[in-house]
Amino acid sequence: MNKIFKNKTAIVLFAGPAVILFTVVLFIPICMSIYYSFCDYSTATRAYTFIGLKNYTDLLQDQTMRTALKNSLFFLVFSCVSQLIMGLLLAGLLTNIKKGRNFFKNVIYLPCVLSSAALGLLWMFIFSEKLGINNLLKQVGIKGPLWMSDINGFIILPMWVIAFVALWQYVGQSMMLYMAQISGIDKSLYEASYIDGCSKVQSFRYITLPLIKPMVGTAMSLNAIGSLKFFDLIFNMTDENALNHELDVLATHLYRQAFKFTKYGYASAIGVILIILCLVATAVINKLFKVDTYEM
Image (tube, rainbow, N blue to C red):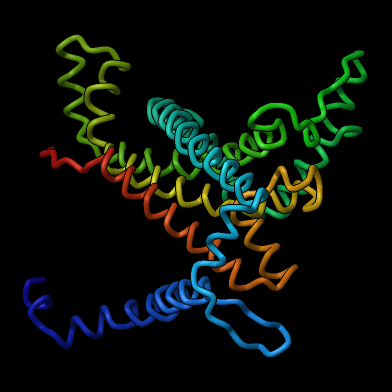
């Protein structure tokens, strides 16, 4: 391995394709978006005119942008906290059962690999005011809530509904990451703890949690980035013009500004804000879940 690292030709051959792909697919488009965010795009002349910080100052006065930012931050907090708790709980439970482990693991992980567009349409019918859950409640004389149209509260009910659907769909990803890390812990550590009189809950707290801390940070970073760029379920479960854009998040607002109103410079500014939020969230999570080295 050391010989390979000293061989510059091998380094170029192995790392070159990844660097080229990263540069073409990610780095160059990000740099172009940052430049376009300072420009005004004209659909008539197909030219970009440099306008400085105007797009960013317009964002400060955009009520829909404030709503989208609030909803995205809500998804960020809800996703990180709920998937951390549920993912650890499910991973801990499935790790300690022998019969049916693979069945339950596959069932919980299955929504992750299904089409978000199809799931969005499915849940839209389930939470319809006249179909699904409300229809079942009506059979027993209960009037169901307006799942997708109630706008009362700081965080409106439709956002809670979509957040729980997202938790149901993606919690399997966090669970699998935690289970993979737990499976790598030396079983002798648990046996020693049981000999010392620890219960399974205490072993999980004092052995499992510290040793999977690096994976917790990784999973939360993925959850944070995924929640900030959340788009597909909201786009499919809601009407884009419903409730005066109260259901918008940053990704849907960006999509509408770019592809419906052709305001590419303004949309690029939203994209830059989204990138900054992803970087800040990742930095904070990495700081909170600083990787420690343990000898096992």
